[in-house]
Length: 205
Image 1 (tube, one colour):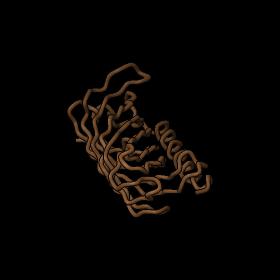
Image 2 (cartoon, one colour):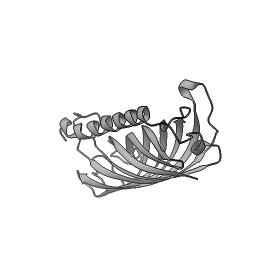
Image 3 (cartoon, rainbow, N blue to C red):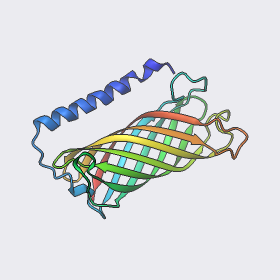
């Protein structure tokens, strides 16, 4: 894949951030952002996106691009606390995902991931960034030059933002990095390093 193929995704991310900033400036907040992030509450989300490899672009490795559809269930571990610049809470999240490989050898990538997420919750704002890291199990029939067996592991990092458009609903945009490998359980373990955007909707209850 050529580097300029990712430009539309970068433009979409910048446009999304711009819209959020303008909306935040022009709209009086009617949503109490603390409410969805109280200890003991749950979050369900459904989203999709696309992942592109190799990452970084330009490495001499086979191209593997795939969609990513994911359902998650989160549990708020703590209440919102902390100083203004890092005010937020911790959330534990479990997710399952399925993927269709649209560029490269193979048909699917599927698995499950456990996440630990830190939600940044600015006081009285509709805009709530987050950071997260996760690990899990993966099953795939992808290029055997990359992975020598079907069973693999996944490691993930993500950074994103929520827009709380209603009391218990948010629209979420995320940039994600995903690593897939078999931990040298096979003689072939070149691994996959992919990155890309995710868009999802969450409901808090």
